[in-house]
Length: 315
Ligand code: SF4
Image 1 (cartoon, rainbow, N blue to C red):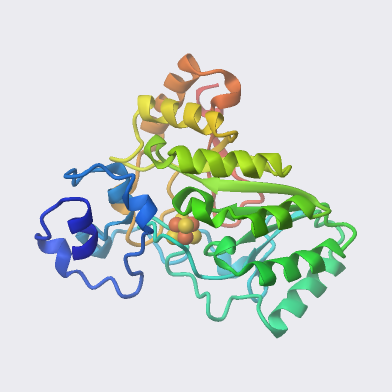
Image 2: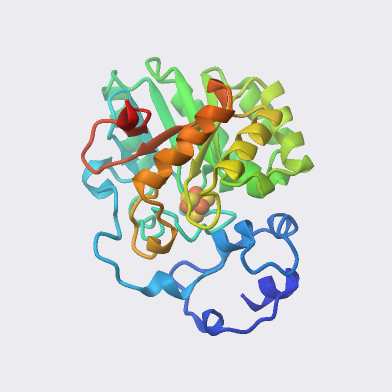
């Protein structure tokens, strides 16, 4: 924490410095730090990664497993929650630790489709012909080495009813140097439809290097979408969200979801209430073309799909 504060030109003082964040330690790539504003303790990128004492407040309704994912785990590391799709939590590794992460308490060491668990997960996918799309998630699946990803993708491509491979990753945003020729060749040559859903919350996260990497991904034939999380003090104003949509579009990415926060223990200070969130969506609706307006959604444990909060709530 001291090193990060020093790099962004802030005094390394204050009660937060003495926090014990060992369970979910601070992690952030240098290229992401370079996008933070020097001397601004409220910088929206800094606030997403800097541990805060509020994380240790016990708030009712905020749980370790806010989406009840352990109940929908069909085999270790395979979540079959929605009809037609299944998700693999491939790794707990990420390039960045987002303080609001809903999987910050996820038991990756046992819920991981590696080794013998991978055979079990693939056998499940083969048996369930209704699954046409497999989502690689984590953690961050692109934190895995290319050879392991390539081997997994080859085995998934051999399942005839799986037609789409979707990757959920924050790496192309926080560590754009990950988009190298090896990865591009792998993505571009994969026989199934390939969708990459990136995770970007603020327009300042998108610089020229990120845009360049996204254009390369687009040229390799990948469909690019973004999911953001609505976060108090970070992106909960209409101007910021409108700029985010525009910058995503310049980078070749369509806004897909704006998620209401999943109520994970330690994240309550980031929550925006539904009524304020819907007002923000009304502003976006008045400003942006429809294709730049993300769906405001919430995930609820046990539901068979995401709940759209806007425009449903306002009719
Ligand atoms: S990159 Fe994604 S999985 Fe990793 S900490 Fe951030 S939100 Fe969680």
